[in-house]
Amino acid sequence: MNQMREAIHQAAVAPPRISAGHGRQQYRFGTNFPGFSGHFPGYPVLPAVLQSLLAQMLAEQIVGRALCFKTLQQAKFTRQVRPDEQLDVTVECRQQQGGYRCQAILTIADERAAQFVLFLEERSTS
Image 1 (cartoon, rainbow, N blue to C red):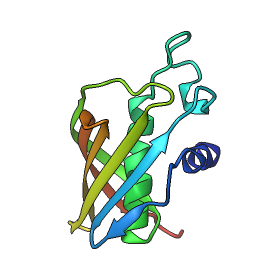
Image 2 (cartoon, rainbow, N blue to C red):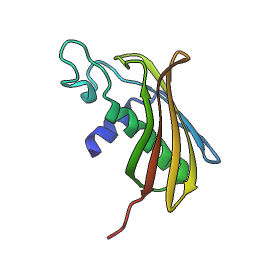
Image 3 (spheres, rainbow, N blue to C red):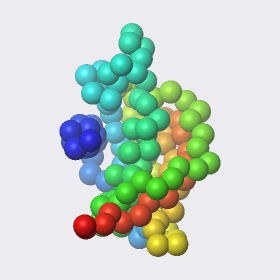
């Protein structure tokens, strides 16, 4: 997973914009991005699991600490994310019940590609 996180960082178009509880990051995944491997041969699409990882990584930057995935709710993946498209990821996090509730919206050229709510919790140090 660390290699995938590094590949995601390399696909960032610019540094993230972070403010109180909110963040925005833009990405452009080239055809050689490892997340497209096998999904799908001859027609690469960014998997939903990686779209949720993008939001989690941005949430970690917003709250300033490593987080673990707990649940994904209210997920709607409405547009495929294809190679070389600029993907805009916006996340808003609020502390809630010992963790964080993070609303994520992913867009391509003002067209919504996905939206979902992530529930994340702090990683234990043990």
